[in-house]
Amino acid sequence: MAAEMLRRIEEAVSRGSGKGVLIAAVISVGLILFLISLGVYSSMFYENPILYFGSAVIQAYATLTAVPFTIWVIYMQSRYGAVIVRLFLRKVVLPFIIFGIVTAVSAVTIALSRTAYANLAYMVEVIVTLVFIPPLITYIVKLMVTGPEDVIKVIEQNVRRKEEFIALTLRVLRLYMLESYPDEEAVNRTLRKIAYVMRNVSKLELCPDIWHRFRDFLKTVVVETTYLPDKYYMSKLMTQFMKWFIISNKYRVARAFLRYYRHVALKYMEERLPSDVVEDMFLKPTLMVFRDMKVGRSLLTYALEQTDSLLRSIERLGIRGDLTSREVCKIAELIEEYVNALEGVRLPMLDQRIVKIKRKFACIIRKPRIRRVEIREEREQEKTKEEKA
Image (cartoon, rainbow, N blue to C red; front, side, top):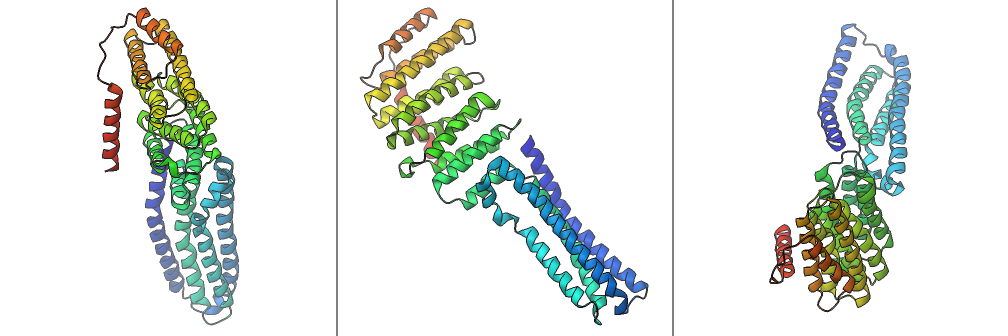
């Protein structure tokens, strides 16, 4: 809602800029015709007006440029940091260019105040002063309503290193998520961009700052915000990060993020279909990644322990009545399928809990099916190919 409001303000200001220039031109022409109609032709009548008007114009434009720019810099630096402000330096040049042009014109007209061209110089100064006011005010208004999407676009245009782009974008996205009603499409587009940049994690350099940013982002999703991003893009991003940890041999970091992923899955279960959430937000980014990348037994065992902890929480939700027996049974069946796909690594405590849940919730015992996990993988690969195409 806030982003939509900013967009409407920007459109209104953009439409008003052209009208403002046209009005300024009409006023300038009208003023010149008025002076001509009074018969004021002699240059001597314009000597003092040029001096006073020129100095007033320079002071007015200096104030109009400096005050909003200072407020904007303080706001942007406190909200996004000094790095983001530096990225915006190229975009804030226009007010200073206009100020330079107006100052140069005023200097020339003041120099011509005691010559025979004083009348023409005065008219030129009036025209320049009025014509540059609408675009300057329009630009300042656009600058003052700069939103997170605008910041992300600037990051995308100016940052070349993938690692720096990911870190800055995650920071801005986290701040955007803290707003009351963030634009859902904007958040999903940003997540898609980050996932696309991370499509080949083997080429990314070690960057703990990014991992801290992603941890803070996940904590924001779980604790601070009421809005949950799209499940598909979140799952994809979580999968990419877990692959990055494994490729970088950061198993301790992977262990920490296993706990974060468990909390994210429980948070999403409040608003999404629980069985889909468990699969997309926990099983795919963890057990499936570990199986494909053939991680060590120690990390796999810890992942199964976290899976058991997640299943224990789901069991409590089922006992309280927050989840239906059907959903609890479906989740237990999903977890059993993914655990069986690990081939050889088992956790007796988890196996016992699955059996216990099936008995307690009177789950229908199904016959073994043909590796549904592999079928899901094939569907995911086909979907990814269609997106790339």
